[in-house]
Length: 458
Image (cartoon, rainbow, N blue to C red):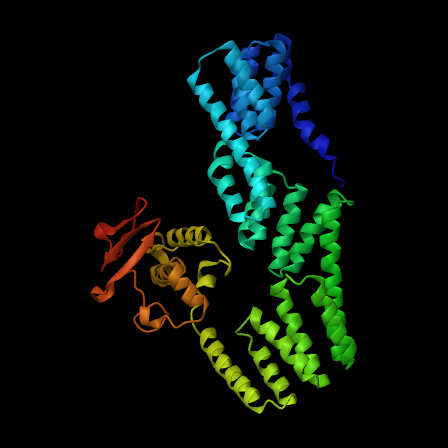
């Protein structure tokens, strides 16, 4: 089914509102107080566009309706239409001079306006952390429905390579407007840089269905398509023994987006393998080293670099490289057998601290033993795993060490032996975190749980 043009999708709710029997009667009554009341109701529901239309109607009927000016100014401030909002606040103060509360709102508006302008300036200067500071601490406080600020925030997060936060922020925008082209582009790029190319492509394609001539979406979509095509050509030629052609294909693919490190690591490794087969040792060493600069734990790259050093008659370097590869392989085998705390909480390795906390709270409530009387033993085991996962991932230092592959068994967090035990068996000491609070010792005092939840461990 074909989509209606966006203008009709915006205007249709207002047309239906005006054509409804209730509205028709109100229109015939021409009653500003009734219209204003409906506008207030819509604003409380955060239906700002509908509220704005009704407030415009009030002021057409009664150009001196001071509260309509004030409320319309508030709606416009929420949407960061600052010049229009400033005019409405000024009009209100003409009708009702000396209102300290309105003067305060006008002051907040000017703060938000200046902060947004500063955020754009900092973005141009590539100070992306400062952009986030202006937007989070000022703009979105006074103008929570400011789409421009939300998109600029997502762009700054993308520049900072915080891809999971970009996905989260653009998700909120698309929930309000599923056809927002800028949000689709930014979200697609975030997935692209996480090397989730299928999801990235779907976002680009959706945007292009809405606007086939959108230049940035076209560039992103066809750039990804060409990258995957060139990669497939390199792999196919390597499989057919056309090694020189394959090497050129790999180099061409790498040149397409040097910043796409999460994907380029595999291109560098593929190129290294081809160069080893061609006997071009120095080039192979360089390519494998590039792969290891991105992922120092890539055992295959260490092995291939050792092979390449044999080609250059660097016998000692080759021996050390192969030994290092064996050590890394042993380490990875050990890591593969440890608990995957990210999987237990159902989050990605790029999850933010807030994401980790949210997942933990949700699962802790879901698997609390008192809520699972029929399967209490399973619930206790799950609850213990969830608590242990949060004890590692909820602590920045422990999370960094865990991500580096360090052994956390000495902290009794590794999932082996007498590890973390939220039930306090045998008087074991522990610390249990929840929503900023904690309880230490062998059990919860009085079965209490921070945040107002009562957990009883019998």
